Amino acid sequence: MIMERFLRSPFTMSVFLIGLAVIYSMSIVLEQRNNMTTIIFVAYAIFVIIYFGTMVYFNRKFPERKIRILTFIPYELKEEDEGHQYITYRACRKVYIYYYFAIPAAIVAVSLFRKVELLPVITLTVLGIGQYFIFWSEVKKLYE
Image 1 (cartoon, rainbow, N blue to C red):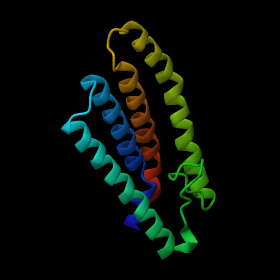
Image 2 (cartoon, rainbow, N blue to C red):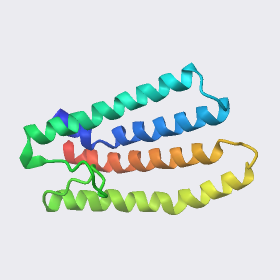
Image 3 (cartoon, one colour):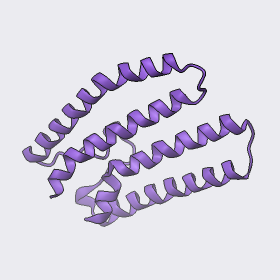
Image 4 (tube, helix red, strand yellow):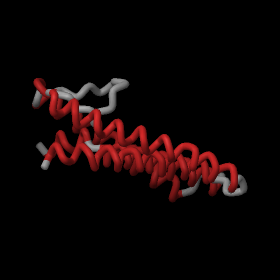
């Protein structure tokens, strides 16, 4: 189902992550509120409202496949049977390996380029998007 794939998609979480990074970066770079920052913030807020509104609608329409709104478990983890669990295991394993190498590399990059004011935010955003990309590349095999 398209709606469920949208709600559980790491792409959606990537948009959340990028939105937060852009809002923070613009507030740092511009050091004051201007029209562009306000427009981006409003667009981000609208996206969040649409996302959670869609989730509430989905939960009412399909109560047997409810997605918990407030949870510590990521929405992407869909472990209905042993097959789903195995795919999640493989995806999480690949993400762990990614972080095993990416975090030290990120620390070195941030240390070497201390003068770049937004580098920590950019680095965290890239690390997060990399995690979602790696996870989704493994999970998409489930949908093929």
